[in-house]
Length: 186
Image (cartoon, rainbow, N blue to C red; front, side, top):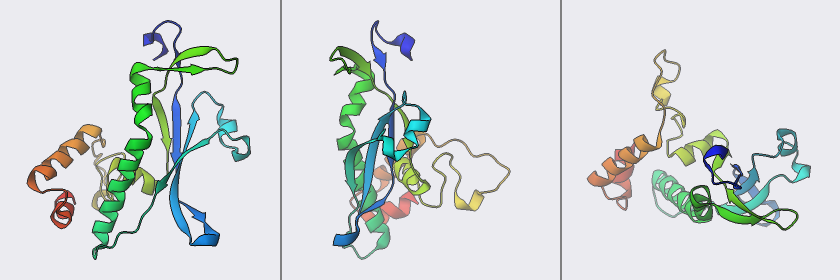
């Protein structure tokens, strides 16, 4: 990727990480997704030691409780809120890979930097949330629980497949009609 950048520009790959965490044991057991950010040019041995502070807290993404009588609707609303929060927090990182940003180095010199998202480190529940798959489906392929362990290799889970599926369901049912929308998406 460095070869296609303008002369003098720098490539800085971004690493994001999140995991559902209890953030206040003493005051009500509040949960959140701390979204951490780092760079790919930091050595893995440094990344793996939390005492070296290779990751910075970018945001605390909310985990809320909704008052709808159906648990599936709660989960849908939580997932929609999480995606909206991620969209807002990461909006500057969406332009940085395409247009680039000016940043200063340790000496105070300005550098023209391009920052594509290289890695998102997450557990399986967070991977399913990010990929918009169910808990009983693979975030990497189109495999579901019923076909886990089959000899047949399912096709990869792609952005295009997800968007086509979402658009198809949205044409049939309004996303605000949660019960019908959930039934169709399953």
